[in-house]
Image (cartoon, rainbow, N blue to C red):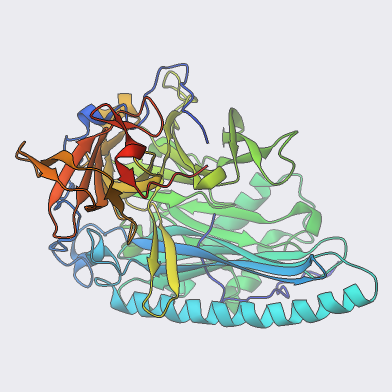
Length: 557
């Protein structure tokens, strides 16, 4: 069969974007939930811990952009969201698309300097890339819709689709490197799919070439070819891989990404072998061939977190041996292909499964020079967007390394912002910096809502799952949703311990939760709080049913 490098997908290089209810079940090791561990949460985290104001709006950090290359590289602050579109005819979905966008955090919070403010040229490059993505998807959907309607008229129907998933495999002040998987189904036995990579210079926003990463393409071809035959002994290659790699190195068509530990090359179906063998990939570590790489590429942050990406291997424990780490959901008997019933982690074929019902998930590999093991941190989402985060130690020598800590009701920060024109934007904070990251928690105190606070990974907090909160409270922003007092209520004002009788009709916006204490602000910005006893739904305040005190409470589920 003829070897084919190009694949007719709905997006080429333009589509680069970022991938992937109930009480907590106690593990065998008696590990605690994050709320149970809050008694120690006021301890500072790591050498990089920032001293923040209550709502993290200071933005007073030293600039980390153009001058960051002089010291240790800075981890970037990234946001992402997904966009879905579909077309229906006669109550049937005939085609759909799903893709993601990525941008540098453009907020004014604690990560502003590691986002668009610190790296404006990279931010502009990503914005242009996102615009191209949107246009490409729109054009492809027009083609899919036309073909789908024709199939319906001819009496044949199966939904057509174009989808994309992507992973930031490195994101620091040196480079931003992204792996993207594109797939399209236009009828037939199976669709087409393929991987592409794009790497930006973080300072200039310019797309980098492979020759800016490696100094000797011939040496790269030699190492990668040998590793391919070692890694895939059962693959029936069309011809010796070295011939293909040499040709692609010369014409600039190799698919590659730059990671924190090395470079990875990817080979799509039909490129080296028949479709049935899928994609092949090899990782070359910086430490095994330092002379091969441009020195600046080998300079990486001491702490980083990266999305688990297909085909990318890691060096766990820095022993010079490549390790394959996999994580994700397993379909079960009852969920069909719409819900997972188990969460699976595998390291070099050694597997662990945990019973867990969820719809989608994202897993990260976490490294810190301050830890004596790498971690796997996975966020899962189920009904009503209820999140559960799992923390695994990836060290088989540690007792109980396969039993995760479970943080029920917790996940990485998401935002929703209504615009003046009636539109909105939303996104999820990507986990890139283990020393300073934002998580949100689910609350059912006087309503259902989420609160967020900043965390760091700390070896000293191992017994609590390594997560240490920078503040003991969660900040809450419910927009224009407020409660109204149905009766006068004595409330503590500020942090002085003094109380004040607030009259009936007072409007109260929830702004903070600490334990079972809920803090409000009034229309004239008075800060006040109450203690909520959640033992009886919907809670009691001063022994009184909360529904008799507050109007406007809303609960999910």
